Length: 220
Image (tube, rainbow, N blue to C red; front, side):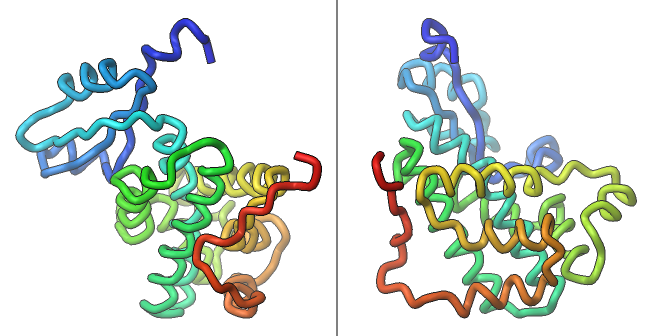
């Protein structure tokens, strides 16, 4: 980050498949900047009758939502590829949002950002929309394929794979529980069978509150 330029940087993220926005289909997004006035300036540049932009003063949360949702979308794709049903899909999306928020708060993001377009909005789109590369990669893996074969056949960039590894390392350092991310990494990088990994989630120790799971490391 360049300190003197930080207030003049904005990030834009949300449930935005580019092809649909380009076709003029109604779309919502978030413009986030540390300087609210600059966020509004960028907002004004993007507003059209069919492209609605909201402002945020939480660029950290908006950026993290855009990155972390790809992990959960892959996991949902794996589940759907395995035929684990709608209940499992909804649970993964909801619990996935919780672990996104936990890591975000540990990094200084605002909790409510994850309840907006760049959080739950982008997550739902990417986890359920058939235009999502990360969902399609997960489906392919759940049906017995490998990530390497999917990339070779489609030429697609699957952001969720490297992001899962990076998030796993970051979560371990910060003492944040990210069980879905952990199980996706086991599938992608440790050769664990997809069904075994996903079913391990329901066998975890019981929880009493949905947002539990942020345990700062000793000595921090």
